[in-house]
Length: 227
Image (cartoon, rainbow, N blue to C red; front, top):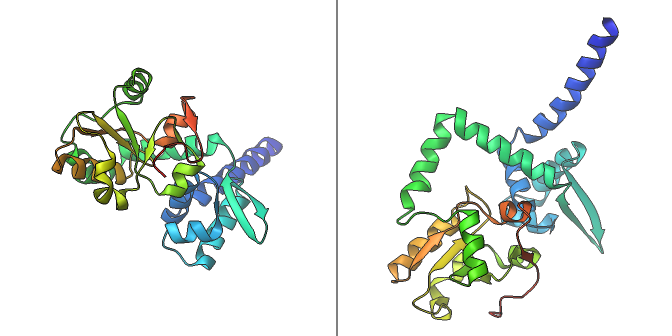
């Protein structure tokens, strides 16, 4: 019995290592960013509004828990998620929090759901529209993330450039915007802007990582013909 107890304790300690690595909003943000594609420490620090030292410290904790991996690229160190299961873990954490923590649903209702002037598009509906050529798919994430991977056929116009580049979107066709995931504010903001300018626009309920994990068509590099 003592041996059984020792085994159970040892296993739970290792499970807790993963939970402890997730016990930081900044580390969750870093995982969310890495779900969009591999990045250097410098790029991660800039995107997450952290100092380089702080980003490096958080990444070391994630690496110690085997949630991220790194490789050298010349003088730089680049990080990536250790596997698809890491993003599934992050998604499950969010789902449980939304189901169990009232404050999560309140924030979602205030900042995301309330901004949906039209019914959001599901992953399956978007896949059908892409196959039929019935909509313009718009990636409003930063350009670096689009280049790392995007919905096949999507066009890249980062949110910060969208208003200045509206003329690139042909009129009379539905525009479906997507971004990093179900809790990313880029796509709702893009849809609001497009609607103000008279375009028919909706957002994808989820984001690129969910699309990719579902095994749907993806591409990388500058394939949007809008460079």
